Amino acid sequence: MHYFLDNLPERTQKPREKGFTMVMDKGLSVRQAEDFLSVSANHVDIIKLGWATSYVTAGLEDKLNVFRAAGIPFYFGGTLFEAFAVRNKFDDYRKLLDKFQVPFAEVSDGSLDMDHDKKCEYITELSKQVTVLSEVGSKDEEKIIPPYKWIELMQKELDAGAWKVIGEAREGGNVGLFRSSGEVRSGLVQEILTKIPFEKIIWEAPQKAQQVYFIKLVGANVNLGNIAPEELIPLETIRLGLRGDTFSHFLDK
Image 1 (spheres, rainbow, N blue to C red):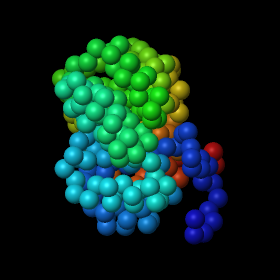
Image 2 (cartoon, one colour; image 1 turned 180 degrees about the vertical axis):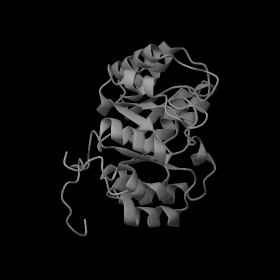
Image 3 (cartoon, rainbow, N blue to C red; image 1 turned 90 degrees about the vertical axis):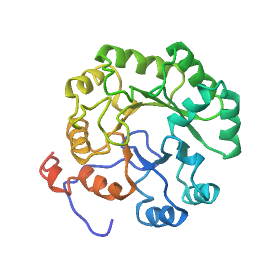
Image 4 (spheres, rainbow, N blue to C red; image 1 turned 30 degrees about the horizontal axis):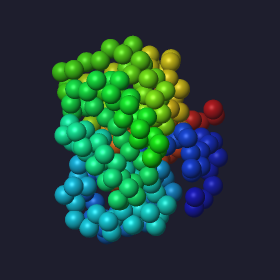
């Protein structure tokens, strides 16, 4: 940091198990990736190339080399995994991870109906090859999953070998954990936290109000995901109580 301030919450240091920030890359160019990491590399823990954007992004290997050079792990979005799974091409997906030397994989079922035991089998198999993040929740805003089911699914996926579970919100923050307005389903979140350790969950929270909610509820070192590149520095100031939204929250604590 460039100067000293006291009464700031202590942030975990990389590599970290909590206070983890996942950034959503929806099609950055190589130069944009370089510019982004030039100011943000210390604050980003992992980069997700959203859904199946890696399929159509020009200069993909060059961009992945930028992430590698900065020491930032990356992975392809869960929808890409689903696109392979629904076509019975799981082995091809595993070969794809090897081809691009992808250190993480996301296993999700937000866009298709998948038997949960089968999903857990995918998690177990992939965990022998890479570090697995599994996503819980549907991209269908009409599909409401009760809290006990979220807890059951999350625990089973952790038991199957997932390193962390991701709470679904899409890149817009308007499904899954949130109502269509973006409002947090606070009862759902708080019930999940009674059973699943907070450090094991990455909450997708692309909107500022959602980020503020989780930081005030869990603390500066809550795991957050689907953060837009241009919102990463602002998020870090919210974590530290250096933006109006959390300015008083950490003082004298």
